[in-house]
Image 1 (cartoon, rainbow, N blue to C red):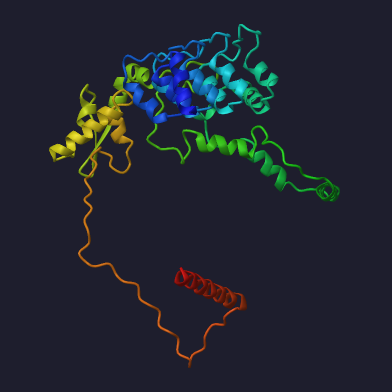
Image 2: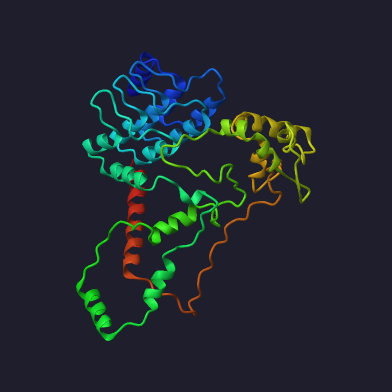
Length: 369
């Protein structure tokens, strides 16, 4: 009954398929609807909600990121009938990750609703979403992602100062004071300090110079890292703007050797068929590439980012039955009485006796029936 009621409600509210998928959290359907050219991503229902508002209010951060990164023309500042934006709706529901994603994509943090004139921070405080309020304040203090810039170095600046303090010679009074302080002062768990060890570890592991990040990544705008409130382009818009640069850095792996591809319009289509000899294999690769990477990323990038099959050719795997029969289980031979046997515990013997008694009782019941 609930499923049919939801369907009837969505029909009466003038909702399209993208809004229904965003409401239910169906990420694969949202990815499939990306290829629909007649779909309005900013379509509003009777209450003024868009697909981004519905996903933000429900807390589906992956769908929100996909809508903002792959659907060109998505508007984060559209308001519903009460004047709420997607950021305000996410803050009211306490969706901290969605709030951070919207702000880093360019949502206006100072936008207020037309009903009470409050921003996202005020609504988070009013509804008691203190985790979201803390996240908003942290983003306001540090709005720039420094580790995504090429000038950032994965070195802790406070390391030399702290090492010098730890290795410095102390007087007897300082040693006694340190021991008294360590014995009588209680240590309580607290949040990580700014520019502390945990903060540095997070920055280092997510930075461009980190060994944990793929070395093939190359930022298109290294001098312009993500900033809170700064509008970011989608993937299709980046392809139109930097299409030639993406083709120039494409690499083709052929017969164990690496050769750079010349920049051309059809170079992306030539990469998957470079090492495929069979025509059926070429067709399958091209069909999958057209269906899944039609407007997301060029096929040259998709083939280059595949570490298992870099050229895009996926080999066929045939599953056949083995000619040899399946081996039978070998029964354990009884231990001779002349040898020492491991001792049996009493609780194990009692368990075995109970099992035997149960089996006998079941057999007697079957015979009586």
